[in-house]
Length: 381
Image (tube, rainbow, N blue to C red):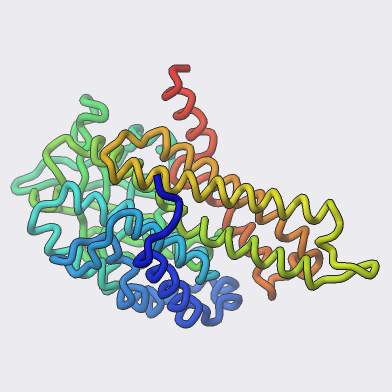
C-alpha cells in the first residue's frame, strides 16, 4: 500500500491548486452574501478538466484513474475557498456522471457526458422529497407507464443545482406495490413540458450552490430516457450512493488542509503577552486536533477510492468516510474560528464561512445518524 503521490499525481495536484487560486477566487464574500451561482466559473472548471477528470476520453474527459481524480478534487478544495462550488462539482460528478457511466446506454453516454465534462451542461440528482429524505423508498413521485414512455408526477425537494440544472437524474416509482423493485431512474431535460424549477432557497451555508425543488406536472419521458432496465432504480440509487458518500467530500478534505495551514500561520504570527498564541497549550492543542482530523479524513477518503478501484465492497468505507469527514470539518471549523478569535468571527475574512458550509454535511447525502445506523447494521448489530 502506497501513501505517497506519483509524480503525475503531484503534478495534477499542483496544477489544480494553481488553477483554483488563479481562476476561482473572484468576489467570494459578495457572492456568498448574495447566494450567487456563477456559471462562468463552472465552465472554467470544465475547460480545465475538473468535471471530466474521471470521464473516459471518448466522451471528452481526461480518463484519469479514480485515485488521480480524487487527488484533483482534493486539490480543488485546497485551492478554491468556494465550498458551495466545489460541493456542486462533486455532486454532479459522483451522483450524476458516474451512474450514467455505469448504467447509461451508448446514446445516453454520448448525449450527456461530453457536455457534463466540458462544463456546458449541468446535471442534478433528484432523489429527496419533503417526506422522503432518509426514508428514500417512501418517495411519492410516480412514473406511470404510457404509450412509448412514462408520465412523471410529483415533487423533489432540496435538490442541489436544481434551480440551474439542464437536466435531472430523477427517481420515481412506477409500481408502489413492488416497493423498491418498482422504482425507475430517468434522465429528464429541464425544458420538458410540465417540468418546473423553483427559485433557489436561502440557506445557512454553501450559498453559492443553488438549492431548490423540481416539480413534475404530467411530464412525459420516452422509454429511452430511462436509465438502466425496468425496476433497476433502487439498484442504481444504492450504487450511486456509495460513490456519492465516498467522494462528495473530496474537496472538503482539501479545504481542511488549507484551514489547518491558515490556523498554524495565524497562531505563529499573532502575539499576545509577548509571544505567539501558538505557544499557549489551549491553542496548540486545538491545532493538533485539526491535524489529526485532516489526516484521518484523508485516509478514509483514499481507502474508499482504493476499494472502489479494486472492485471491493465499499459500503462500510463510504459510510465511515461520509460520517467522519462531515463531522471532522464541523469540529475543525469551530477550532479555526476560536484560533482566529474576533477575526475568525467576521465574515470579511472567510474563516466563519467554513463552519456555515460544514454544517450541511451532517445532513445531506444521508445524515450522520443514518451513517451510524448503516455502520451498525454492517457490523451485525
